[in-house]
Image: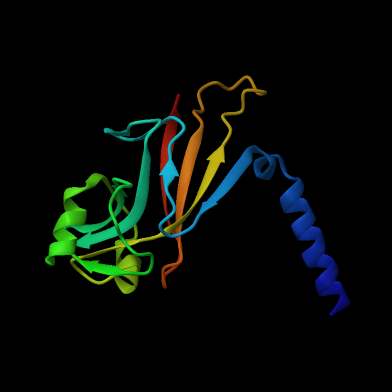
Length: 162
């Protein structure tokens, strides 16, 4: 038992002390809390304008499951699942600014019913670009990890552009 505690402590100490852990900055956003981008978030051809604020939600329809960037003026209650075919759902859908496809949507299907949207808690992890190194080919990245669903955590990785 004592050996397990020592090994666990050593693993935690090594994980915290590694350069990769030191280069990551994380910030948690509660469900319904406004998320503001410092710079543009880029994923392939999709560019989410920097310097804007959004509510973040998970949107699921017949096309798949998406991370929805919603106008922060929308009135939604945290924890509420809104049906897209309802009047409230139509109002929310009209205020969605960006939809970003989520990978592993089979896992998300367990957590959110078809044709619904709900606000989610998100943890943003920013990875430095390694300016101290001479490798300039690596761009800084922002990983948005969706938390609070009854499925394993889903994440979306963006390249940051300032």
